[in-house]
Image (cartoon, rainbow, N blue to C red; front, top):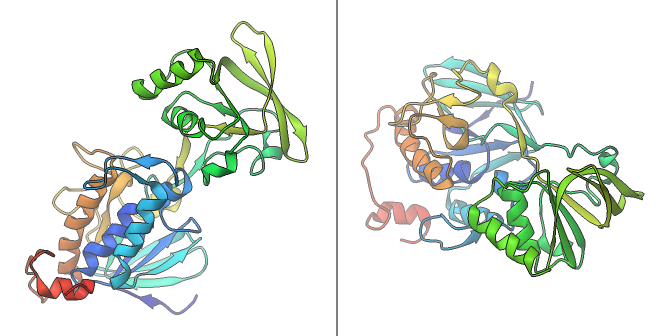
Length: 342
């Protein structure tokens, strides 16, 4: 076991909520380390939709997932957080009141007064397309997320699915692609009605193809996709040409070791009280998509709010003898000095 890394707060998860928590904690002179199972910051924003537009961040009419991550990283620079990426938390042990010893699968040990779980839905992975031999094409011609839209320029793209991700990427990639074929098992979609209307408009104008059925086979060699077979609901088989496939069958969320941390769970989520979003264990908080409470909305902006209230309570644990004076960044010279703008 390595020597323990001591910090005020350990944040599990470096998505938008975890990153903004660094800011709220930093304003209160609370230092944080962050651990994330991914190899980069940004969580689902970076992993699943780095170039997909987000429209409901207050004050920002439109920002991409990667753009939001970049701005959050810039915002927290004054507080010098330390990141431990590509690691998963194995154990959390209570060693004080409150104080915790936390270990990762890489053998790192942390000792902290507060733990903040901002792990989204836990560790997540896309559901694999149920097509024989799809593994041979994954990462070269079959992709479960879009990292760079320009990668698909002038491609014949096969998109499979009927939810928001499938429809969003159909519309976002259409201007770049040579041709797009959307395949769904039925002519009824779970996506936003406006997106479905836009897609049907493109189909009616002959600018893309819609096939009702399922992909049953892929063609190509050495991971290079050349075509696919689609079985219609009337059992007819149709062969189409394509050199890229994007299957969107949703995500498989796995809590992983979270289930063994001694925290009360409810339907694979962590119940919290709503004054500070503290869990059943004093000193352990949960913010963002991984928590649950009456009226919970899974929105990034709600996670930001949860992080702000969490920081107020965390201050009591980190500085039990120090009275917290509430201040505004617009008028507090001391806060502005911390941010480097005073």
